[in-house]
Image 1 (tube, rainbow, N blue to C red):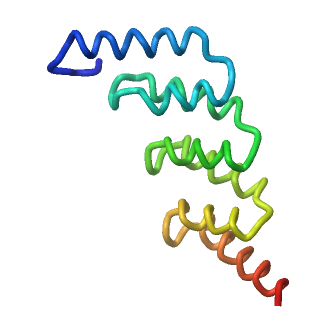
Image 2: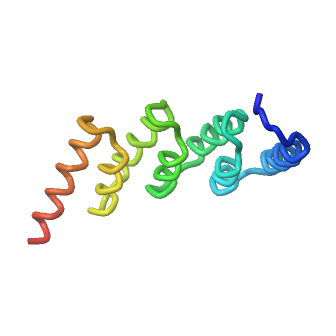
Length: 121
């Protein structure tokens, strides 16, 4: 479990997160849990799981990618979903930014960015 030198302070944080989790219903609520969860507390994985269940928009999937550990299944799922809903040059630029170098995700994003850029000419 989460290790903290100031145990009273940690108890307050973890108690607050438990309360947040008990009332969390929306993607935004679960994003807040992910934001405030101490690393190693176990709350991050719970929040990411709920975020992936509730994500609907490109921005939601960007948040999942942002909070997901690099190389995790959460990150891969977020990138796949981002690609499935990306429409604008800005969306594709964001996919290219998060996708690992040399990955199919990045290649697809760069290809789409080039297509959209050539469309504007």
